[in-house]
Length: 151
Image (cartoon, rainbow, N blue to C red; front, side, top):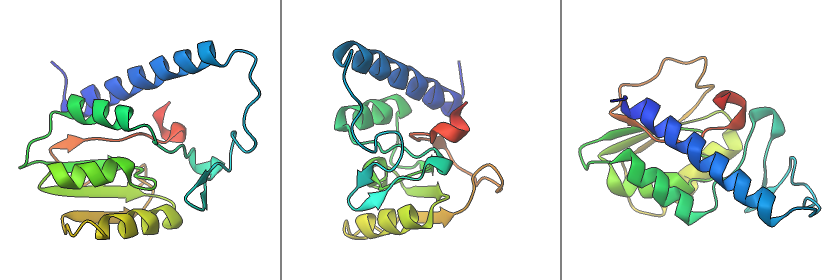
């Protein structure tokens, strides 16, 4: 048996690896889109390569992560690197409380703005480097980890 944190991280790594294999097969010989390495846009926000940002846009992957986390309504969820909030929006619907740590102030503002429109008040967004800060007390860690801290 593994802890919720290690199981969630393991699943995310497996899902990412599977998706990379599928993309490689489907796009053999394809030219990367302009700005794909860094600077891809997300609703007007440009991702920052130094933070290892990649945005979770596939709702199927969001659902796989949520299913693997086996969330309960009483859970306090810890999300690392919420980005624009695609996973966060689902977490605040499923958990008692969500604590999201985001290093990029622009992304932190975006996730706050996006989640404020839901009418829920169970989100706390911390602007910090999760590798340097003390982690909160939580029941489950659910995240689409930034590349820079996942290896």
